[in-house]
Amino acid sequence: MAEQKKNISLALDNVPFGTDEENEAWMKMRKIPLPEGVTSRQIYLDTFRIAWPSLIELTLAQLASMVDMMMVGKLHYSAVAAVGLTTQPIFLLMTVIMALNVGVTALVAQNKGAGRKDRAELALRQALMLNLVMAAVMTVLGILFAKPMVKFMGAKEDTLEQAAEYLRIRMYGFIGFGLTSTITAALRGAGDSRTAMIYNVIANASNVLFNYLLIFGHWGFPRLEVAGAAWATILGQYIAFIIAVVFVMTKSERKYLHLDLRAGFRPDGDTIAAMVRIGLPSMIEQLIMRVGMVIFARTVAGIGTLEYATHNICMNIQALSFMVGQAFAVSGTSLVGQSLGKNRKDMALAYGRRTVIFGILAACVLMALFFFFGGTIVSWYNDEAEVVRIGSIIMSFVAFVQPFQTMQFIQAGALRGAGDTRSTAIVTLITVVFVRALLGLLFVNVFHWGLIGAWVALVLDQLLRTVLIFIRYRSRKWMNFAKFAKQKS
Image (cartoon, rainbow, N blue to C red):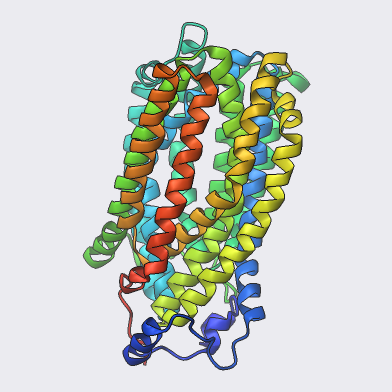
């Protein structure tokens, strides 16, 4: 316990390990009381303490992405479309790494709750070892097949070469980006979101600076346009990677995780099996999602270059709103995982409920912002009248889904913290493939509703996904997925 208090002191730290008898009793209660000595205020503070660094980090990262696209948009709207065509291929190549990261976050959280620091650090080493191999393979594939991938995404003659070059350059940063994301996932599992905030803020600031220098050729740098945006991104990614590695390799009593190279990277069957058990459904979920998103993106790309550029602008703005849900999902994943690692189902539910309340309040602020100022924000990317007109309509859809998507992100994060990744995979299959992708095809190609039809399908996807995740969360079955560790003697 003293070891934990050197790091982040949580209300959870002040309650004893739960027993199976207590858990059985709690599961029968509709409303579970807080443990003696724990207040609702403490729960909210724990949630906020982990969420705010993640919120700043993720928001600034997305703002850097928005500035990136705004700068590219000043070249021509076809440049925006070219960059947008690479989004799904990059995410598809990241699928395996993202899946293992879900596993390492859950394992670190649960082992921290159980007081097993050695097992948490082992999980980090195993994930880094596996993801290094995966990232190297994906890098080669991405470079070799950059042009076929963006062509498959629907790139037209005015975007094909720019998109292929952008994707090819981005792949040179894939290893650094993948390993940094693994370190970030482990730190978040331990409840340390502040460190990731620091190195990612530095990286994003560097990205914006290099964008200015390399896209337009300022201060004697070459004018590389779309390629310059790609080089700026990977320079920022490697800056984050260097800082992250230095941090976790520097031993300090204030840090929970330490990457000790002397401990070695020999494969550990139990740890790898646990990560695969948690991560495999997540990988299937990501693959399903990417298939649906690829179909959806190809459908929108077929409408026209201007419409696809407008779509990418609005998706880029909507991604900013994801940051609220994802930041509070970090809290949910970490706190729920730690609570279940300590065999405290009552605390898992307490943290989950209050995290949702916090997140929805923040989402309502964004909803108002996008509803009243959506058109103005779109014009910052590209001020062509038709882009702004269509974009203003789409932004009303973005505003509408804010509270729903935020609740969905947070409750899905809680499920992942418990290791219940299978249910989120099933929900993704139903909503992204059978709702967003297929209804998008129907509304665009049969009803001829254009870009509006595509976004109607997207909204229906988000609403149904929120309902299904809510039903799963309310069932409480996910609390039986975590393998409770024994308290250390």
